[in-house]
Amino acid sequence: MRETVKIIKEQTDILFRNMYEQINNAELDCMVDNVNNSRFLFHMIHSMDKYFINPFDYSYDEVYRLTGIDEKYSIISESREGYINNPDYVIAREILVAYMDFVKEKINAYLDNLNDEDLYKKPEGCKYTIMQMILAQYRHSMFHCGMSELATFDNRGDWLEYTGLAYIPISNQTSN
Image (cartoon, rainbow, N blue to C red; front, side, top):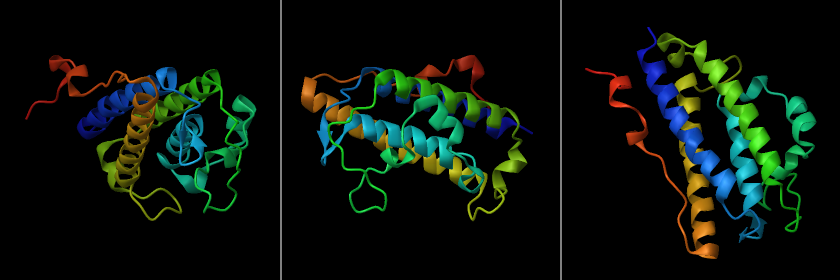
């Protein structure tokens, strides 16, 4: 059975659309708590990359080759070990888009190989189920999209586009 996975894929597609909207159109250099928005967006993408599937089976090596950015730039709080205090370093939009493209492809391939029964299993070494990992990343990513949206609005005075359930064509929706 793949009915639930189909819904997850649709919702993940909507999530990606909202993430891309922020990455492509948000103010990257505006500051939130002494960290520029590009780093919050990088953090959001990195979290999807690392935690959507299994953080215990993760390597940043391929991402570093793609982006050239130290993984520690995803640490956005001065209170966390490894934080790099460099408020002037703005991650280029092209790098954020390339990283997001990489993550989207990786996650879509992962979802293409899941069945509904898999959602209740725990990835090797992980204390959370696959479903818990996915839902946690939905929550985390939309939190950071909201932060980016507000920072952009505060700097420019305009709201970026938001995609919701209306994006899913009626013909694709699962019936009861």
